Every structure is written in structure tokens, then in C-alpha cells.
Image (cartoon, rainbow, N blue to C red; front, side, top):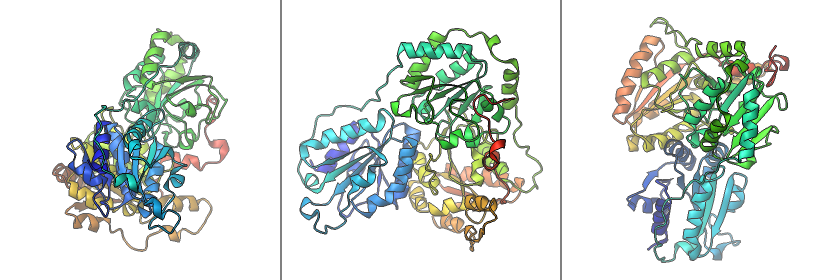
Length: 562
């Protein structure tokens, strides 16, 4: 058996299903994956797009994705997407090659110290130099990618190993995600704090979603009568129409929900490291009680020392906690607090208005989600106007949805590549991307693969003729913004049309409704639909404005309510 066929067989046996990459000079992993009945080979035009596609696949499937690379520019070009995968805790197995050992240090073609370059973002890396290491290293890589804090692993395989004739190994079965339950003593201590909290808040992150903890989360929030927030990566773990759901935290918190975060006397954080954007405007370490539950010990004491750390699987530990907590006396909850929770849930969505009214960014986003339904695959970007998509009630998704968003690195040009990987993985639901024109132009290389795969993607492009975020930031210092404005109109529509896609540029609500109906038909048939909506510079989400307020107007911490 050739080395590449053995690699394909081993990763398929370990539970991987998608291999993303560019074809190499000689047949390699992508070709071997294409031959294997249990693997899908996704050919892309750009390694950066490939890394984002791997993220989209993992977000939808829950399985690790495999990114096939080669030493040199191929590896370097993927690093931006791999940095985002690392930030998101996305299970990604990178399999790359090393040049012949005889050329190391002698000016070898495309020689690169890949493991050193990957070290800051890879949770495990290994050079396979002996043929008898290969199967072990591949299974170890999948294990490391999915267990503990999921993340990026890198395997560099020596040229000499790839030239070997190898004996097929016996199948060993899928690599399992290992789960543990937090110790009883810690669970009892957490239950004691929760029983006495008058204004508790529950925050769920991407780790809670990965663990499938939605049902247990809702059980806890209902037992506590506590508002339930999520981070951007935790979105979709619960149905946002639930009476206790309050939307997102930090930079994405709606104004109506902000007092709940400011007034909390206890915050229970589940499956989140509380990155900076999640803390913005409300979190002050030491200002109130904190319980943190995570499967990775490195998540603890990262931004604050918690009163109780629960090390374990989110779903299993929450179930144990519910058993210990018992019935909670709801009289312990502040009555004004309960009224505030209800007010947030009934915050009105943007009014539909007349059909001939001009469009705003929240208008366009809300209408798009309504057209495709709350169970969709929603892919988000990093930009100024598309940040409206993170706000409840502008967007409300169900617990059957999948929301794919950038992590704390927030690379520009994430959306189209991630949508490609998501749509290829699940063709039964509509895939919708919300992005700006700058981000769309940065990820155009995803479009030919999307057209070839016939997977159906709708792109809602909020066009401000440039880079909105730096333009907005410069406006606060009266700096020149001419470099943030594009001198030529966006060419994304022409690129979409060149691949057989359909485009529209609605300017009123009525035109948008008609465009969305057409987009549904186009994408149901596997095509690409681009809806471009012009937006104004001052069409900015509340959290962005709040972030630029003077410090004395920002959130007051865990227990800072008047």
C-alpha cells in the first residue's frame, strides 16, 4: 500500500470525513482521499480558503477536518486560517510534507521549518521520520485535535516515509472524545453558591455547544430562573426564542440586556475562556462571584480567579450539578431582576415598515434570516456593519441552527471559505453568509470551489464601499479615512455571475423581499446567490458604539447596578 493510501485509510478509520487542499505536483493525500469510499476530497484554489473551509466543516459535523498541505508557500498561505481555527478551538489535523533529508540545510527547494512556524498555534506537532511511526502519529493527531481543548495539530511527514511501501494496519475504529465529570466536592461548592445567588447569570460558550450541553443548560437556567447569554461561538446551543435567552455578551450585548450583566451577583461561565470581546463593557474581575466550567484546565484563571472551577464535560457536569442543586426557592431571586429578564425577551424586532423604504443593515439581515428560517447555517464575518448579525433581536436562531463565526483573531475574509466547508458538509439546510464588501473581495478564491461543488450559498453583502471598521475608528480621532474608501465599485457580483451565480442589488424592502425569494430558488438548485445592499457609515450596532464611549459610561462590572 502506498503511504498516501495508508494515510487516507487511517484518518478515515479514526473518524475523519473531509480532506481539504490543493492538488500537489504528484498524486498525494487529496488524491488518496478521493479514492477512499469514506472520505470526501474538497479541492480549493487557495490554502487560506481551505483552512476556513475546514472550520466550517467541523462546526457543522462535529468531526475533525484534515487540511492537506506541502512544505513552503502552501503551508505559509494556510497559517491565517489556521490561526483562526486555533482561536476558535476547531479540531483541525494538518498533514504536510518535508523535503528530502539529503537537501536539508543545503538550499533544498521549498525547505521550511514548518513546526517552528506552527508552534504558537498548534496544540501538538510531530515530525514523522520513520515508517513505523506513521499510523501511530496519525491516530495521535486526531486524538489531540478532539480531546481536551480542541484545536490545531500539525503532522510533518518526511519524504522518505512517503516513498516507502507500507503494510496496511488493522482498523482500530474512530477516535473517541474523552469526557469527565467535575469532582463531587467542586459540584457541591458550586451548588451552594447558586442556591444563594439573587441575580445569577449563565454564560455558554463554544465548549458548551461542542459538548451538546443545550438541554442541561436550559435545565440549569430554568432551575435558577437565570438569564442565559452565549458567546459568539456558543450561539446555537439553545433556541434564542426561549424566555430566558438574552442574546450575546460583551461587544454584542443588546442595550436592553446590558443591565442584567451589570447587575449580576454571580456569573456561571460554561465552555468559554472569556476572551476580550466577550468581556467588553461589563466584566470586572473580582467584582462578583464567578463559577467556571470547562474541559480544559488552561481555561481557568486566564482572566479572573473563579470562586469555583469545575473541570469536566459541560453536559455531564451540568447534569450532575442539577441533581445536587435540587429545587431552588425562587423567592431568593430579586423580583425586579425577574421583571428585567422578561423585558429583554420581549424587546421588539425591527419593524418591517413600508416596501418602498430604504434598507438599513439590520433590515437586510433580519429579512434574510426570516426568508431562510431559523434552522439555517449562518456564517458570519469580521466587519463593521455585519456585526448587526450578532445582535438579538435582529437575528434569532434556533437550537437546530449552526452559527459559524470568526474567533478572537477575527480574520477578514473568513466567511466565504467557512461557508464552503459548511455547505459541502450539510446540503439539507440553507447556508447564508453575512459579510462586508471588503471581506467578500478578500475571499473570492472560495467562489469557484463553491460553484463546482453545487452546494448552494447565499451571500448577503453589506456594501459600504471600503473597510468600515478602520473608517469608523478613524472618525473618533478626526483622522484621514481616504485609504479606507474603495476607488472602484465592488466587482464581487461580476465574479459570482462568471461562475453561473445570480446577483441582485435591492435598495428597498420590497426589492429585498423579491431578491430573497429568488435567492432561495437559486441556492436550492445548488447555485450561488449574491444580494448586495448599500449601507451608510453611521449604520452601526450598539455594542460598537458602546465600546467607544468614555470609560465612566461603560458597564460597571458583575455587581455594579444602582
